[in-house]
Amino acid sequence: VAPGAVVIGASMGGLRAAEQLRAAGWTGPITVIGAEPYAPYNRPPLTKALLRSFSVAKLDTRTAHRTLAFRRRPSVDDVSWRLGRTVTSVCVDDRTIRLDDGEELTYEGLVVATGLRPRRLPLRAPLEDRHVIRSLDDAAALGQVLAPGARVVVIGAGFIGCEVAATATELGCSVTVIEPLSAPLTQAVGEELGQAVQRVHEANGVRFCLGSRVAAVESEFRRDAAPKRIVELADCTRVVADVVIEAIGSVPNVEFLDGNGLDLGDGVLCDNQLRVAGRPEIVAVGDVARFPNPRFDETPRRVEHWSMPGLMARRAAATLASHLLGTETPHADFDPLPTFWSDQFDLRINSMGAPALADEITVLEGDLGALHGSATGAAVLYQRDQRPVGVVGVGISPERLNRFRSILQPVPSVAVEGAVAR
Ligand SMILES: Cc1cc2nc3c(=O)[nH]c(=O)nc-3n(C[C@H](O)[C@H](O)[C@H](O)COP(=O)(O)OP(=O)(O)OC[C@H]3O[C@@H](n4cnc5c(N)ncnc54)[C@H](O)[C@@H]3O)c2cc1C
Figure 1 (tube, helix red, strand yellow):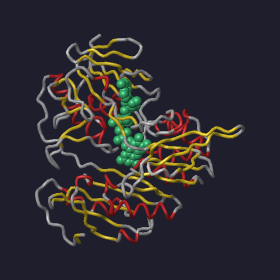
Figure 2: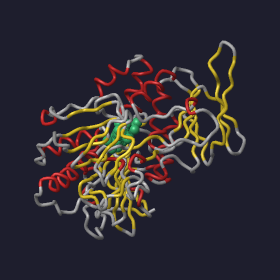
Figure 3: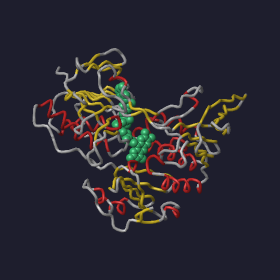
Figure 4: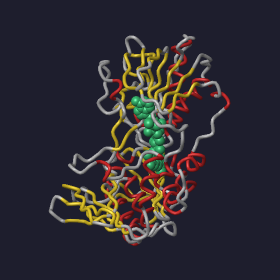
C-alpha cells in the first residue's frame, strides 16, 4: 500500500485538510490521526450552550458529541481514521511517524493540524484542582461542577475566560475573574472595548480583580464536604472558590516535530502557501500554523479563529497536492480576512481583520460607554500606522458589521468617512 498523505490532528483543521486534498485532486490514501477519541467536532459551543447542557441536562459526552460532530463529506468516506492515537515523533528526513503505541507509518505528504492545548500556571497545586477548557472532555468535567451557588474563580479574562464567566453566571454561580491587565480582552480588542464588555459582565454580577496575578491555589479538605480552593493573589488577597478555571491562553502542540531543525518557536513556521519552511511535502493548517498574511505585513503569526482552518486547509491542500502530483503550484498570495465571534451574556462580539495589531482605536458608530447588551451596539475601527487593520462590532448584527468590510481591503491608505479619532 502506498504511504499516501497523513494528517496529524483530527479536528476541524484535520478534517478540512482531508476534504480539500480530495478537492485538489489527490486520490491516493489519506490517514488522519487524532489524539482525542472523538471524530472531529466543533469547539465554540464548549464555553457556551454545551457547557450549559453539561451542567443543567447532565448530558453525557457521547450525546454531546453527536450534537457537535462535523458532518463528513462523502469525498472522505475512504479516509482511514486513527482516533485516540497520539503522534509522539516525526522524522522528516525518513518521512516516518511514530505513534504512542510504537507503530510506525510513512508518508508522502504530511499535514500538521495539531492545534493548541491550554497553557497552565506553574503552581504547586495539582493540575486536577484547576479546570481548563479546550476539549469535549474538559467541558464535561467543568459542566458537572458548575452548580447554582458554586463560587467560581476564572483566571484570565481573554475570550475563553470571559465566555466561561458569562455561562457560569447564567448557571447561577458566583463568579470572580482574575486578570493581570487593567481590563478584560485588552490584548485582542484594546482596553476601551474591554472595559465596555467588563461593564456588561458587572451588570450581570461578575466580579473582576484586575491588575492581579495568582500566586498560589491551595486546597482545604473538610470532612463530609467538597474541598474548598483558596486562590491567593500576589498582593496576598485570598479568594475562596469551589471551582477554579484556568483560561490563560494556549500552547501549540508541536513537540512531536522536535529534532528536525524546524522553526517551532510559536507554532510551526510556514511560508505564505502554508508550506513548512524548506519542506515542500509538509504543510500546516489551523491554530498551530504560523504564516505571513500580506494583508497585514510580512510577519508570520498564528490565528486562533474558527474561520481560519477551513480557509487554510483549502490553500494548504492545494499546495501539497500540487507537490505530490507534480502539477503547477498555486502562487497567488494567501491573504485571508480573519473573522471571529464571541457570545457573552446577550452580547455578541464580531471581529474582522486583526484588531490586536492596532495602534489607534476609533468608534465608527454607537457609544461604547452606553453598551448594555444586544439592545445597544457599537462598531469600532482599528488602525495601524493610519491603515485599517480591523473592525469589531459589539451588539450589532453581522450584516451591519459587514457594511465596514470594504474598509479592510488589502490596499494602502483608505480614508474612513465619519471616523472619530479618540
Ligand atoms: C472552547 C473554545 C471555544 C471557542 N470559541 C470560539 C468562538 O466563539 N469563535 C471563534 O472564532 N473561535 C472560537 N474558538 C477557536 C476555534 O474553535 C479554533 O480556532 C479551532 O478549533 C482550531 O481548529 P484546529 O483544527 O486548528 O485545532 P484543534 O481544534 O485544537 O484540533 C487539534 C487536534 O489535534 C489533536 N492533536 C494534538 N496533538 C496531537 C498529536 N501529537 N497526535 C495526534 N493528535 C494530536 C488534538 O487532540 C486536537 O483534537 C474556540 C476554541 C475553543 C477551544
